[in-house]
Image (cartoon, rainbow, N blue to C red; front, side):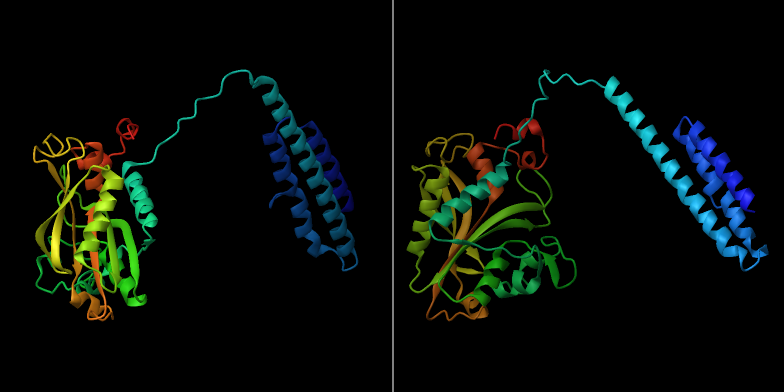
Length: 339
């Protein structure tokens, strides 16, 4: 058996040396070292040997196996080096050629508005608050003084995951969560995506973005609300922008108002952007309802507050003269390059 091993060793070494490509070398590996290879067959036949012969033959087979594996690995490295040298010789690079032009992107108009609004309110001492987009009806409705029979809770207006879990319809639940966990004074804005069961058209989308604000402290009044919003619109839409309130109803504020801004394109004279009305509807606002403060553990006799909220897309459309909201979501580079 020892002669058989040495003969297999010599034959394998000759075939490894004679191999001219990786496929041939692999065949040699299988022939001698594979599961059905010659050395494996010798090991399986060791049962016929005497107890004294087995360790000698086993040691010899392992020694030969290690030697052949090393020779094969060395031959593989030689082949790979030859292949690399051939590639380097054939694949020449002209380092004097100009490089490919790097195309830079731009900030999406929605993110641009969000960042701009953040900077304005951070400058007024506000903090940025965030919360889950998958929300409970408790925070989205109950804590915000929206009763069970309110139309906003119908299936046609809200995406329900379960009976009590929904996709938030506004960022107001963030306000409720903050009021539960933080004592006044509170000054926050809550930017983020919201979801409503709306059909897609030029002015509606089932997914859009909101920024809501909340201030709770002692002696907060409607005058504070109007002053804050005036400062915001002048910084965001232009220093000559004016704001007006119209009576409205929201379940979580009392009194409530819709806020319009003078058209920053025509200055209130009437144009295509403002539909010749001179004013652009911008946001909803009002004084925080006492029930909301009570629900969140804040004494309405000691504290008052105001809240406001607006759609980011509405600001972007008004500011940039965009007539179709869908353009903001289609990712058309030709459109986005304008910003």
